[in-house]
Length: 172
Image (cartoon, rainbow, N blue to C red; front, side, top):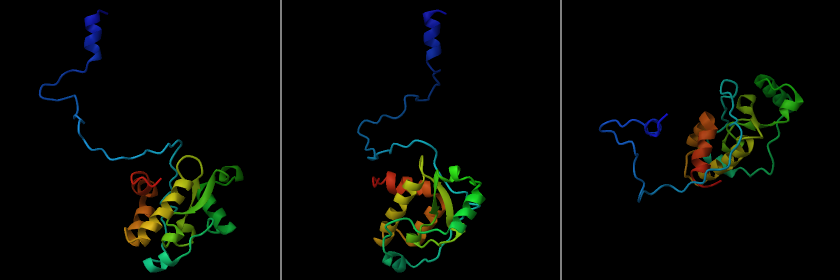
């Protein structure tokens, strides 16, 4: 292969009228965002099994709740039922997960199995969701976000909500 042929192959073809250089970023104001170091899969509930359930839409009641020091108690029967629905029937497999409420109790979520899912403790899952739950509670109680908005966003896609309110907002 001649050097001229190799140079021709290395360059993409030029299309008349098309600027393939891309936009210049000189002077552009880009948002300051720190992308967290994430590895592993994103743990999400199966919305057919865990659609989320809401016990209250009363913002004042939600904001009067005391902050829990640990995770809420989940009955062994509820825990077993949810693991069974998700197909995680061995204790070795269950060891990789923590049971979590999709709509957290501190956002008016209901303590029922339709609101429970096994969130992975590796990758992006349980700990990031817990972080989101606390930040969303703060935003609701500061009246920066309505309770209904917070409940809906967490219920539909907790991961996208975490990216928006934690990662992109620099709260992580």
